Structure formats: C-alpha cells, structure tokens
Image (tube, rainbow, N blue to C red; front, top):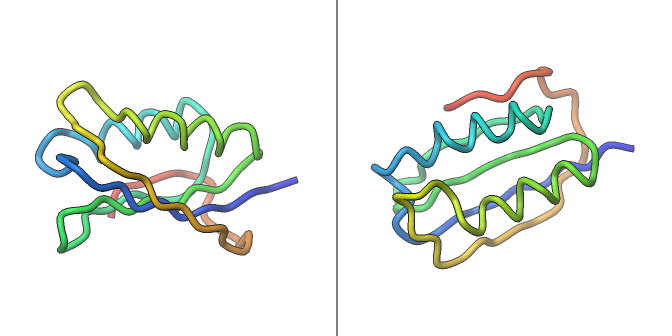
Length: 90
C-alpha cells in the first residue's frame, strides 16, 4: 500500500536548512517526492511511500531541524502517482 500526502509547514522554516534536512529525512525513510520553498514563507512537501514512513515524516516535520521553529503543519491527502523513486529539492 502506498500513501501520498502534501504538507505545508509554517514558522521559521526558510533560511534554516529545512529543505536539506527534509531531503535527508525522506531519504532515510525511503520516500519519494519533493520539497520546496513557497513565496509566502512556508515550505511545501509532497511525500509518497509506505503509510508508516509518511507518518514518520509528518512527525519529523512538526519539529524540523534544530534551527527551525515550526508553528504549524497543514496536510492533505493526494492520489498516489508515478513519482520518480527519489526525493529532491525543487
């Protein structure tokens, strides 16, 4: 079973290594997808993989890397798609 979710993370999440730390965590969890900065200061993440791994990433996004200060994580389910098998920064 594959799960796909979109996350929008708010707080102090740009300029603190959030995208690179998310990339590392997604690789560690074996997820596919991407992470990118949004013009409004949030970070957007699309993650796909085993449901427990996507949930683990969601829990990590609540904290983020040490320099980040996460104030909120919005999540929405997405249809599973044929994403490339890797996770990257956009």
